[in-house]
Length: 139
Image (tube, rainbow, N blue to C red; front, side, top):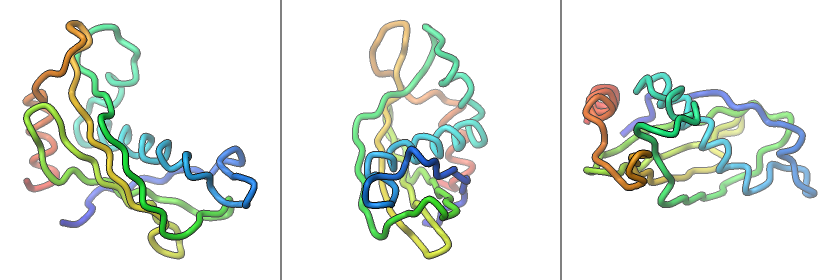
């Protein structure tokens, strides 16, 4: 399965650690930025998730994994490729590749659970989300 979605992320001075490369914890932020862009562009719901609304459907992270391959420097141009390989009933994974001009710097995965903010519990993936992701990813 290929990555059909890619977005640029900015390496900020505050991302750099004492070794002169992007700090390991920052990759979770890069994943988050890419995930929000994907949801905005593919599912058309990124703004709703960011609005801080007290009601409606949201998502929470159930799991986060990162594998580091090579360091990212402040001078690097960074793109994050994102894909959703499958959909469950209430959860689904996002897979990521952090890329620089030198190749893949890291890979990762987050599992998200769709969440009903009104009942404060998990809920089935909304049909419009499921349809948009299925169509985009060819699932």
